[in-house]
Length: 171
Image 1 (tube, rainbow, N blue to C red):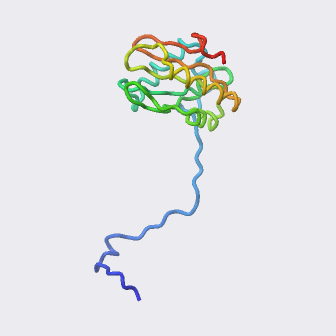
Image 2 (cartoon, helix red, strand yellow):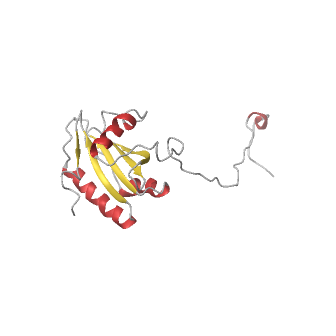
Image 3 (cartoon, one colour):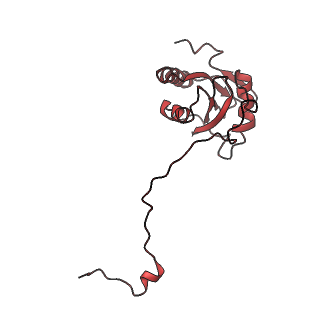
């Protein structure tokens, strides 16, 4: 015998529901509906990466210029942008970065290489010691996965710095 008290008419107000038993399948596609290689933006220099940041990342609805934001550009073998991923949004002077978060999307999208970028809300684009350490960790993780880290670009106010150009990519 059911001893649980019920309210009369409750079944007509709150209907029982069930979850579907079948799993869902997801497919990751590029942001612009799989553009042709001719239409994909070339991103083989820090200048072009900074241009990409201004056109696409800085206009992203979740981008906050008052906080450090880290984005990963997912590149094909010809260094054309397949898509980008806003990986992390931090505070005004720090951000959490883990190789797993960077390379998870790169693996899922079959990216050949990755270029990471983040901003410094202070406007100063010179890399911090933490930026250098994270870059070296990402280089090593990419080597294990056979996904090259092309560069790490730090964006300031109207300027940028490339850790590759500054010589931090030699381990």
